[in-house]
Length: 168
Image 1 (cartoon, rainbow, N blue to C red):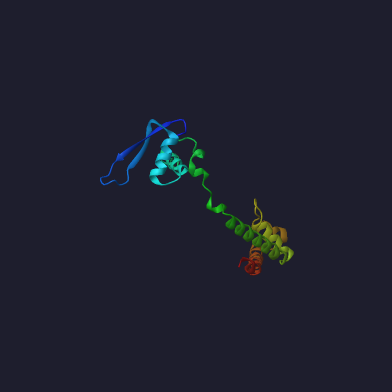
Image 2 (spheres, rainbow, N blue to C red; image 1 turned 135 degrees about the vertical axis):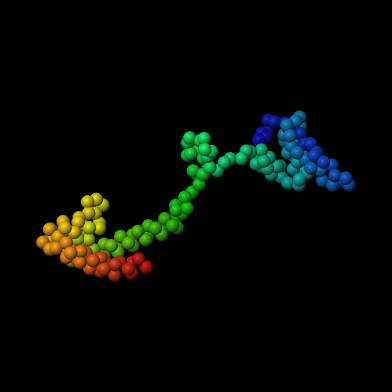
């Protein structure tokens, strides 16, 4: 990269026969940098700022998007700074609204159940740990495990019907 303290030389690479355009290169040499930029800008018919920008771009080095295999810390690789497509605001909003609708639909469906069915569904499906078994619930309600399974099936069917409109 070239800064304003360096001196550069405009060297013609080729002089075409017949007076055509001359190809130039900027290289380390005695001509002061601002003069070299001005001469290059005149030759290319662009602003001096454009010459400086292109020199900066072309003088830069390539950067690997992904870390090399010998890198220990992957957090500094450019790939780590790319946005996650799942974090797109529209998708996040859609996901939040969908979650809210499902949650509200579940609450509505649970309130529509009788207390025994609600207790069975909550004990079997809505606990994060230690979900109740059919036999545990059968002992609690004084019925057979098969009857608990039937009540559970009927409650699930009723809940699905109530939640179907909110899922659409």
